[in-house]
Image 1 (cartoon, helix red, strand yellow):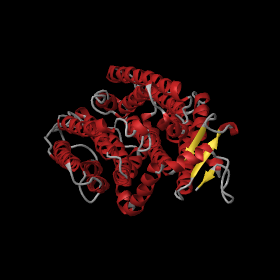
Image 2 (cartoon, one colour; image 1 turned 90 degrees about the vertical axis):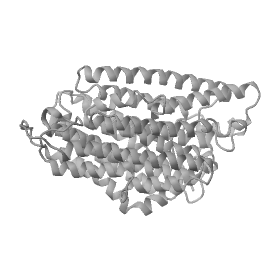
Image 3 (cartoon, helix red, strand yellow; image 1 turned 180 degrees about the horizontal axis):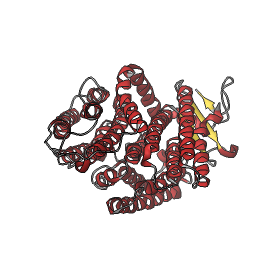
Image 4 (cartoon, helix red, strand yellow; image 1 turned 180 degrees about the vertical axis):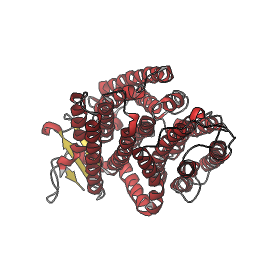
Length: 512
């Protein structure tokens, strides 16, 4: 079963390569191949989730080269959760794109598959340099996807996005070089062993490298003041691309969760909890900035783009507290907000297609076509995003509020999250009432009929928010176990140091 670990990378890689050579094939054939590959990837990640649920670490060593020298993939509960989250999102986005959004670029599906490959590789890699490689793979694919459709409306924000990420990649490489120059390794488990032993002049060099990594991950996650590139870039992208990008900021958050408790955690000596004192206030300020942006949004896609920033701040605040309860709550909220925001991007595009010249602008216009269907989908997404019962966003925020101990941090967290949630509700109420409720007399040009694939994929992705409510108990138990596994880094260190020295009943690369 160890060879299953490479499936989430191998499937989109092969699918992307085939798409490159099928660039001039009929679009129906390319769509069939893309959706088939995404379904297979989702099935493979579900298998990995079942395997990881027993609490074991599983390692895939390429070429049987053992760490810290070889390239390894690592499967645990956190990686499995992110893989399933991304694969499910990728499937619905691919189905939506096959409704017509993929036209005009014969390599759209190839870029989409390479993007998924980069995401999955980032979630499974066991060393910092291959995390950098994964970032580059997913970023290069995202550059092409962001420009899909052309026009200055996408080109200018796309150039900003490319420039900032190139700067971030340069900082990433410099930080990795600084850490390697002192430790002689980039294997995460090996770093967790060697970092506590560093002292003297080398300490400041590693500290600088660690802080630079935090800046890079904050840029990827869109933490203030590194978040202003996001609203325009996401709002101008096509709907399935923007929806897939809902998980892009979570890669930065994942990197923080994976690296800092392991390498710069409580056992890191003088570098323990590196940067976490800065992360908590920055998270709250990011949340506040996202709310302000949402209140001033002029159209639905911009509103949803600011919601991404709100979710980033909401996620990082409990993560920065460094507790099992906080991380568990953040992971629950991460699943909910990623699917919710993605669904809202798709809904916003459908609204734009049914309102004529008004598109998704938050103005009063003639009554749109399919108003009931679209208003229900928007209502479900808005209620979950604002954190109102009975949908999953409420449970996520409730767990976050319950995760903090009494004190100053509790006062700040409760105050910002509750006030931010109230103002977010106002932003969505304003948008929903003007777009769906208030109408003026006038002629609305007849839109194109709504494609069944587009409608079904949007509805099913929206329904995942409701599904989380019914699975709240098991999901909460899983995220709790995941958080405990993340903070118990001795297990991670052991399996990566001796992946082939396993218990008698364990398969190669598996340790309980």
